[in-house]
Image (cartoon, rainbow, N blue to C red):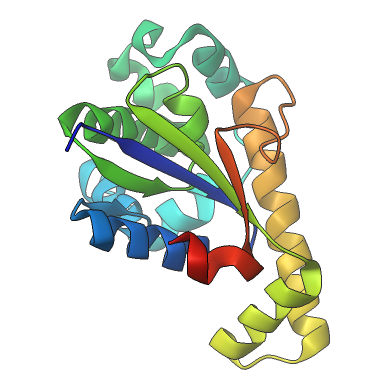
Length: 192
């Protein structure tokens, strides 16, 4: 099989993790989602919880945005200690995502991987979404929370992910419009 890196952007409750894992299993290639958090934690010396909390749901400082817009290669990794914590985590994530893509075929979920790997011919970028009621129902089924709590959780997660993505891309780019494909979750069973 020719090398292929699949990046998956997703809205909360859309099933992006499940779809990504299924695709990776069917293709026999590595799958990275929560595993990215663990690897970054090991490399950075931070706890996995800190990496999870600060890595995809916080707004990074303007320093990382300027680094991202110039490209990571222009960044001196020795300066990480002078960066704000979210920026340090994003620098580790960017470095890791590029390393994994260079290494071979894989599926990477979230963490602006589509943006980090944009322009590469060996990448295919997908965004997974669905109607709010369907996404809230998935959260209810997975976590056993009330309908109102599930809807609030989905909306808040989406808001934070969207804000993070727009900040990292530094162009206010809408990730729903980005990429090579878009999957609605009601099609998810057939999509994988």
